Length: 146
Image (cartoon, rainbow, N blue to C red):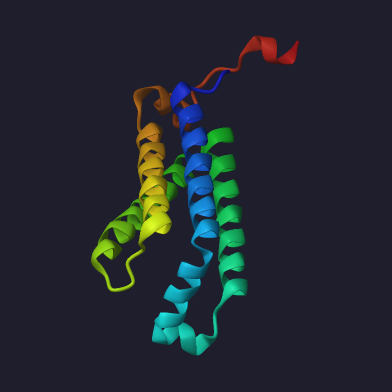
């Protein structure tokens, strides 16, 4: 069976969100390091660029897992885990806007753009055409095996 349009839109928006966040992070590399170093608890740990790279690699691994389990396997449990975790992330981004270490410039634009794309990806998972995908009632297209 062909995947529903909402699942395809989820897939594209998930990767677009990750890409926007990554590009924004690369462009604002020094600003992010400064934020880490200005936070006393982070500075005490000595976290720097190696930590940032490790976090991006871990994020990428989770995005791969979410993508595969949702867009390719139709896992309803993973859909809910993704929706809750990403909603909390969006909320934290919005709450951080007034903080003393609030992102500015390119990083702010990247964070807001990535959050908007993530919100859209969550929306796609709850559209009507995605329901059968997660119920597992989608039929196999007979031309798949020709």
